[in-house]
Amino acid sequence: MTYPVFLSLITGVLLLVATPIALAAPEQQPAEQQLEQLKQQAIALNRELFLLEEELLFPPQTQLAVFVSVDAGKFFTLDSIQLKLNDKAVTAHLYTGAELAGLLRGAVQPLYKGNIRAGEHTLTAVFVGKGPDDRDYRRAVSYRFSKTDEPVLLELKVSDSSANYQPEFSVAAWSDN
Image 1 (cartoon, rainbow, N blue to C red):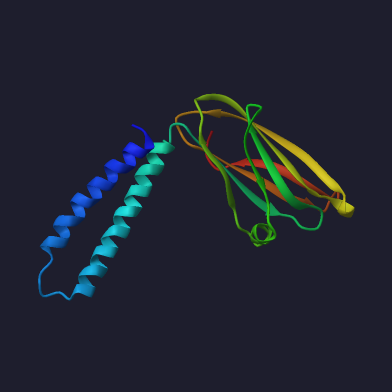
Image 2: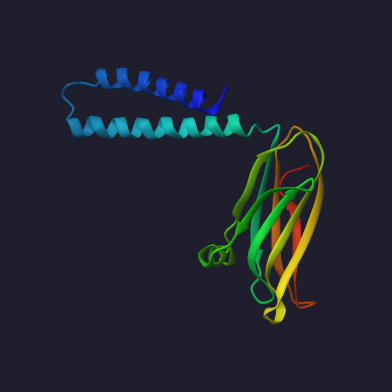
């Protein structure tokens, strides 16, 4: 079933469910209260639709999600990340000042979400930015993993190493894979 057909089907179901609810409302309730109830029901149905859509587009059996965290600032300023899966570019992101500020305050950014088949895979992340002494810096980190029927959740970490005054780049698995 294609996405537009699925969306049309769900919209039709929403209309069929909402119409009897609106007609069954008692006449004594003020129109504003009825409208507010309908809004709340629409919000709840929209959330359920979103969850169904996520499950349809990214089933757990094939899901790969990659996140980014930054614990740096002295030795590296992130400019962009390019992500490759099995030597094929899957996404790239150029960071704004606001996004960098959020990452430096502890935010975790979802960088990529997609579907992959079971088996062995290699994820490569290329980090570009400014390194020590404000020099251009470009480093890559690769991570080999085995995909099973469980979702794979990976975190790309950028951190400062005061031992060697250089940034460190690593990949951590949030899931057992």
